[in-house]
Image 1: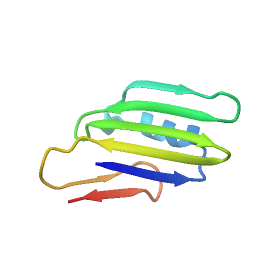
Image 2 (image 1 turned 90 degrees about the vertical axis):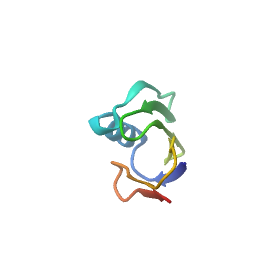
Image 3 (image 1 turned 60 degrees about the horizontal axis):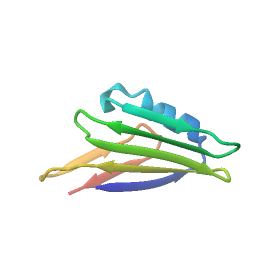
Length: 88
């Protein structure tokens, strides 16, 4: 399951909110901020197994959430404000 979102929030703030969310069990956290651009990626585990990538170019932040879902119904809510993904 893949969710792609955009926001006007700072990429650093969005990335930090995911990184500091202990329920996501972030690991292999990496980020790079060349000039005014930003890219950050982390693996997530626990109840939500997958990865989160956050990028920013020209003032728009893009968030890509990839969840490995094994059958059944999954519903997730990110820590970024007003961002919800549901799959069935």
